[in-house]
Amino acid sequence: MNTSIAALKRSKSNLDTLVSELNKVAEPQKQSNSYADDRFWKPELDKSGNGYAVFRFLPAVKNEDLPWSRLWSHAFQGPGGWFIENSLTTLNKKCPISESNSLLWNSGVEADKEIARKRKRKLSYIANILIISDSKHPENEGQIKLFKFGKKIFDKITEAMKPEFEDEKPINPFDFWEGANFKLKIRKVDGYWNYDKSEFDSSSPIADNDEAIEQIWDKQHPLKPFLAPENFKSYDELKAKLDKVLSGVRNTGTAEDVMDPPTSPTVSQPVIQETVDTSSTSVASVDEDDDDTLDYFSKLAEEN
View 1 (cartoon, rainbow, N blue to C red):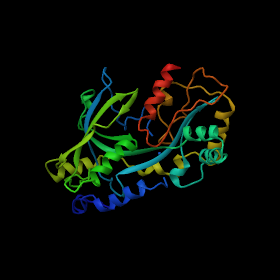
View 2: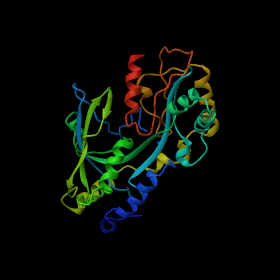
View 3: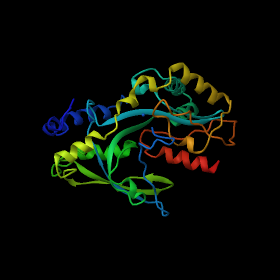
View 4: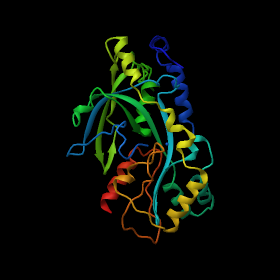
């Protein structure tokens, strides 16, 4: 673990180590901001449905190994309301939702398989970023925030660290000295946020001197608490919640609550108040490839 700026500079954020972690993530072994946590930054679209911001991914905080936390979550709606919770599979533990999905999938009935698909886990990452440009909220510029993102943006990071073509030089986006600003470009495509045009700029130091860099490093937010076991509901609690959602016992909440699963123990259980058809379970497709499931929930909440 790096505990000094000199050690961090010598390590250059350990590109080889991070690439090794990327390889683990890419294997099929296959996680939340919400409420009013002002540590988190979220992009905002203009009236035409486009969004643009520039920020820098930051390295692991002091006494931590990785610059990101990786979480799995489930998000779907049943007769009893919304089920939006972090998954115990994040901690390599048994999860009642995943077990239920396995039973549905193994039934051999195509309708059951479709339900399992729509209740499947969603993958998320949390990382520290330095906001370089945010025209919608310029007061954020220069601030260090947490950023929650999905697989599609993580793929951009992977491509930068492991380029496909021999004429492309790999970069470590999380490095203070040899990293690069990330230009987040969002378009609305078929009602969903699309990040295909997002890209990394050329490599450059994040600041002019090591003193300024260390000041940035000191202000970063710890990521390990997001993976602390005490911040996850127990198997029995999740099972009881799942049974309630599928049985038709209705909870109430606000449309804003449905945006994200909890990331800390201080987050109240998010559910939505609405009128839905209780004759069948309504679910959203939460494939881990879908980077914008939360935008879907927001739109659905508005419709209800």
